[in-house]
Image (cartoon, rainbow over all chains, first blue to last red; front, side):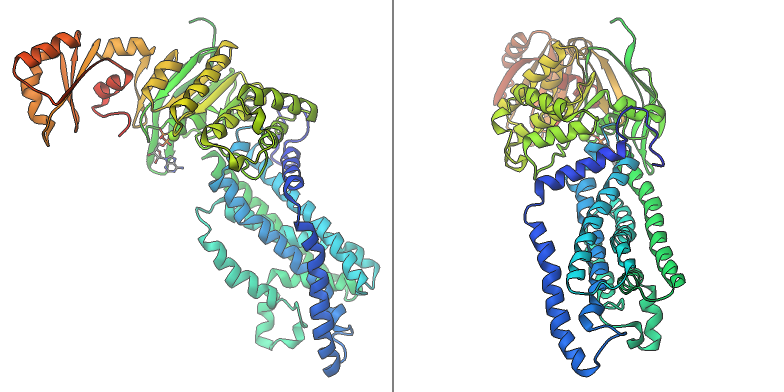
Length: 265
Length: 309
Ligand SMILES: Nc1ncnc2c1ncn2[C@@H]1O[C@H](COP(=O)(O)OP(=O)(O)O)[C@@H](O)[C@H]1O
Ligand SMILES: [Mg+2]
């Protein structure tokens, strides 16, 4: 990987950082898995079946789908977004400030880049596994209708990285968590609610549509839906991918700076 | 001392914005030596340690460790160093053993090797009984020992310790010192910072006295004391708000007099004789103590301030 000139032989250094995160997770995951299977099932049952019943009563279908099928792919996008958010703010600030385990890692052969890449690779790994699981659950609810849905795990991973990379970069330069709660309140929650997550873009008033389309999550939701149903032409999908890739790439570039500054200052 | 220097730093500078925390210091450390940085809080010890552990970038000057430049050979240098940072920075949610094994994996040691070394080092730092406990539940002294064990996982040639015993009770400190003597006997080069003069006297073959980012003196502890202080010190306390008023009356009895907020120090060759003379002159302190000079006195002489404010 870029930046990791290996002067010491052996496993790539960023891979050691990835392995550390994996090992840490293996030691501490207990309990979290049950909820990550249970949550989507409850969510889809409550919203899809409950609200879906109401919708069916009034409109019949949404964009040609039952309401349950319509919201199922967006659940994958919102969940992977939340994974990227949750893994990147407080956990990183703890590692660079409160407990300083990244500073400890920086005394080993690892470079700041290795610590960053290892972290992001680990978050991506979790995202992929989560997205596979969610794809399977969505399939159980009958919302998978195309071979394109095989790309759902990759879409989920991309959504996670699009959020995780810039947020890790941001946390690595933070002195306190004061702004994190603000981010949740004024960015993440509105984005979760208004990214065409629960109803189509066409339902928003005209002046709000550009705002919705500005939200990164909107692109994730749109992609997930297109993949699950095999709908829509390819070009707009490439546009969505480009937005998310750009966020991830810019986030990584920013993170390389903030992480280096934080750990080598 | 013979042999090439295992570590050299020349005109080392560290700036944080406008503020200069380390102001162009020079140090040369020999293999197998145990070398100290003695100075009060804010002297620039941690900033210096972080630079010479090939982690933090110097703002100026050069460093050579094992003959290598940290700017180009950071990973290689760090693979041969052990670092015990000022803050333990341990994984609080994990067990003692996992902290060691996982850290060892950063050096790309095999699972078998980290397991063996962890067992060995748990024994060495007397933590075997706590191997499976969560680190959060350990005492401060145990956490410190675990951090030292962690710093030894890669069998370093140099162990860098930033305030190894700050905040520990005397018993925990002595246990830790004992482990450090053993490492020294095994040939590990020790670099230690401390603001405890007794720690510096106990552990260091040679040290530098640091104050406000600069080195103000360098040498073996005994040499420094001989050079900058007298053999003995008489400490006198009086019932007064201002010990300064005794300066003129006591000055004739000593080579040098230092007035602190709560006592007056007389620097003399024979403390008992001086004390007798003081009493004979009808000066009556509420308490009097005769002791040998220490590095604390060296620091006071050089900077006019005490090590622990
Ligand atoms: N990251 C930093 N940013 C700004 N100032 C710093 C930073 N780190 C240390 N300092 C300042 O540099 C000086 C030396 O600090 P330090 O090296 O920690 O000294 P010591 O370890 O001897 O107590 C102190 O005045 C401290 O406030
Ligand atoms: Mg310090």
